[in-house]
Image (cartoon, rainbow, N blue to C red; front, side):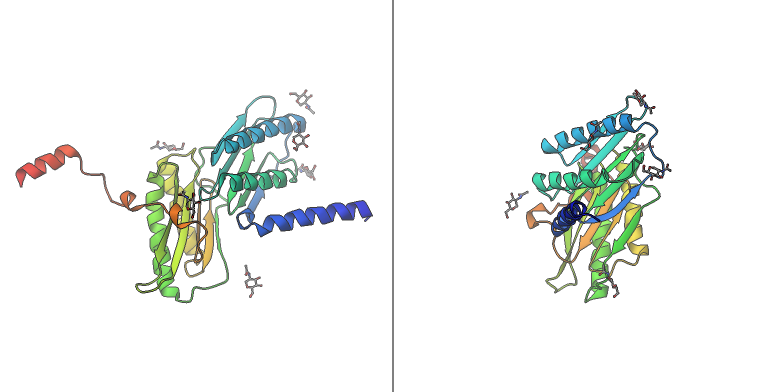
Length: 272
Ligand SMILES: *[C@@H]1O[C@H](CO)[C@@H](O)[C@H](O)[C@H]1NC(C)=O
Ligand SMILES: *[C@@H]1O[C@H](CO)[C@@H](O)[C@H](O)[C@H]1NC(C)=O
Ligand SMILES: *[C@@H]1O[C@H](CO)[C@@H](O)[C@H](O)[C@H]1NC(C)=O
Ligand SMILES: *[C@@H]1O[C@H](CO)[C@@H](O)[C@H](O)[C@H]1NC(C)=O
Ligand SMILES: *[C@@H]1O[C@H](CO)[C@@H](O)[C@H](O)[C@H]1NC(C)=O
Ligand SMILES: *[C@@H]1O[C@H](CO)[C@@H](O)[C@H](O)[C@H]1NC(C)=O
């Protein structure tokens, strides 16, 4: 290996290490299609245009965007989403990291990168309405909570509530926390998020699968974990990763059934 190559390698390593030191740019999952594009220059043009559109949307303060270039022989469709507790600048930084890494993949006609803070995906066909698919996964760290039983009760309750509430919340994002045990000052923190191009039932279905995967992966006593699918993301930790004032009030969304309609309420009140 010659000296130029070594220098370039050192720079790449430095960039990768810097990226990792920023907690939300931690890469947790990646995948790409086995099929190469048929017309690389066409696809490259279209992909560049969609990525540029996504960046414009994020620069405009958005946390979710899709873009499409259905022209030429190789169409490109792309999607980005950031966790809403990030600042807009951190969201753009996460997208920038994802964009530069996804470019290093072989010229596949589809790829996706999932970071704690954001994800980026592109395909040669439209995928924006997908909510749950093969490739979904849950994962958690090695560390078991000190009071595992109380932790599991708190966490499963919190995730169940997020699963119910998040699909009903405009923007499909909720962050919440729960005390571990009655008298403890310890808490568990969690977020749930769906892509904004699916509907409420798609979001509900996705979070149901993700929550189920946290359980079947035996992650409920682990101090930190996540579950992902094409349409949603769940993450929890015993250490806070969003600010107190970013907590979502989910209680209005947990009531079962429809809110009483006013006619019924009126009649009911008259009868009693
Ligand atoms: C796709 O392209 C990459 C890089 O050009 C090559 O290594 C790989 O073998 C190709 N895959 C297929 C299935 O053609
Ligand atoms: C790719 O598509 C462009 C424009 O659609 C065309 O000019 C070019 O010849 C194509 N290249 C190949 C290798 O098919
Ligand atoms: C697309 O973007 C990549 C990376 O920024 C660049 O290397 C490439 O030349 C661009 N391709 C076209 C067709 O503009
Ligand atoms: C989990 O524990 C194993 C064995 O103790 C260790 O090799 C591995 O690096 C740990 N993984 C994490 C994510 O801490
Ligand atoms: C939600 O979206 C899915 C996928 O596009 C569709 O099949 C379903 O009918 C939609 N449900 C409602 C209630 O709109
Ligand atoms: C939350 O509080 C911090 C200061 O602690 C403040 O900078 C930030 O703007 C607040 N965010 C919201 C959403 O209110």
